[in-house]
Amino acid sequence: MAKGVKILERKFSDIEKQLSGFIAFVDTFVEDDKEVLSFKLSQFDRLNAKYESVKEEIFTLSDLEFKNFDGKITTCNEHIEKLEVRLKSLNLKYSKNNNETGSNAVSNVIKPLDYQNYRFHSLMGT
Image (cartoon, rainbow, N blue to C red; front, side, top):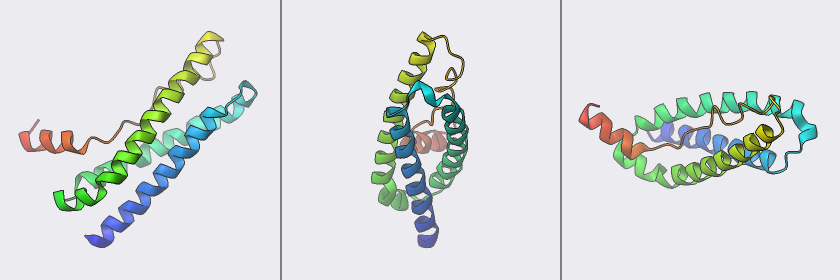
């Protein structure tokens, strides 16, 4: 599984880089970029789908393999939390301006990966 874990690490690193890019975009967003926002949000939907598939792979890791991955997940979850705050801010900005373009900015925010919670529920059968 070591080769599979390395591939998973590369996928995860790619997602982290894209998350950082979204954070930078939202931080520097100006209202003149409305067309860019629609494009970025469609990219964000694809990133969200990619992240969900990577999460499924992570959930198949053994506890030992997961321990090696734990730091990467913590960092990624921190990026997700930053991005969520920034997207909410962007969404509020649009709500104040009654502009529909950004109204769905927060609708598909990536959810942090909670492996321990997943393991607990899978062991409990819930």
